[in-house]
Amino acid sequence: MNRLQMRRRVLLAAAPMVLAAPYVARAQTKPEKSKVVLAVGGKSALYYLSLTIAERKGFFKEAGIDLEINDFQGGAKSLQALMGGSADVVAGAYEHTIRMQQRNQDVTGFALIGRGMQICIALRKDVAAKVKGPADVKGMKFGVTAPGSSTHMLVNFWVAKGGLKASDVVAIGVGAGASVVAAIEKGEVDGVSQTDPALTILTDKDLVKVIVDTRTMKGNQEVFGGAFPAASLYSQSDFLKKNPGTTQALATAIVRANQWLQTASPAEVASAVPEAYLLGDRAIYEKSFAGVRETISPDGTMPPGAMENCLKFLAESDPAIKPASVKLADTWNNEFAQRAAKRS
Image 1 (tube, rainbow, N blue to C red):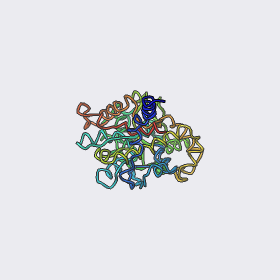
Image 2: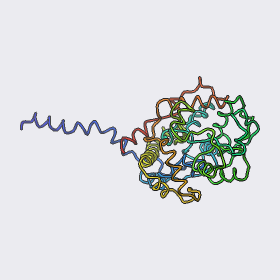
Image 3: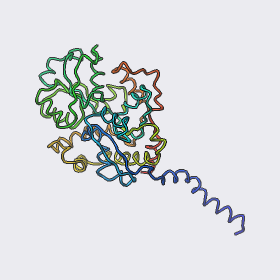
Image 4: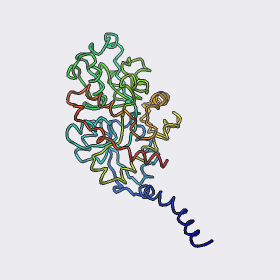
């Protein structure tokens, strides 16, 4: 072999390494912050199942993150923790990124957990018998996770369809899980806007009638016109810029959890979560998961048209939202989830 042939072979052999170099560099980037504080509101709900799975399966640790999770009553409270500086990142509804932009605060989502809202509005059976539509619920009390949360916004969205204002109904924070069931059983609220497994428990006990259901992709299509971005990881935009390695590690853990949930059996999921999350009925929990599985994002990325569906929903439920001034591109970054999905 002459020198020219040898040089050509060396260059050809090196070519794949050169092309792969940028990806390898990114893949090997270590988290800038190994200790991360995450805020969430109502972690026991299936709405945040990917977070729980990533935690319980050790996906955060394997990505180099020592994660401290602070669980609040609802999404609005966890957002306050982020903006107040006591949390680095939030597992919460994507819609909060749009709300904060309207307040001149830069918040960006980077790993999607739910591509469907997963929230239902249900009325107590005795109340439902008197209600023909949203116009009939004026003055009624609705149990939401926390005022200002996505569960609250869905109530506002629904009553607006009946010509009512948000102030025409009362939103009462009841948290998520067992406290939701108790609020209905004790007659403390006329209805609830909540997630599973609480909703399935209430319907199986024949205590409520579901009025609006977004636990399936078909339901999201009917209510919003397509996919709807629900739970996600988001943080202040500066955090993503200053800590790309940490952001990537967090996204990778969530995407792994999303992917695991695509094929895990309901029994495997029930065994993976804390016993308290089952609310005393493993079979109901498994049934609830099976019902919402399709709304869990398969890859952590934002589906086409989903952000627009969310903006329309917000504009119809909150007069303070001005769609024309919203820059949706600044509320989401798909790069981290895309990178994570490629590695899996």
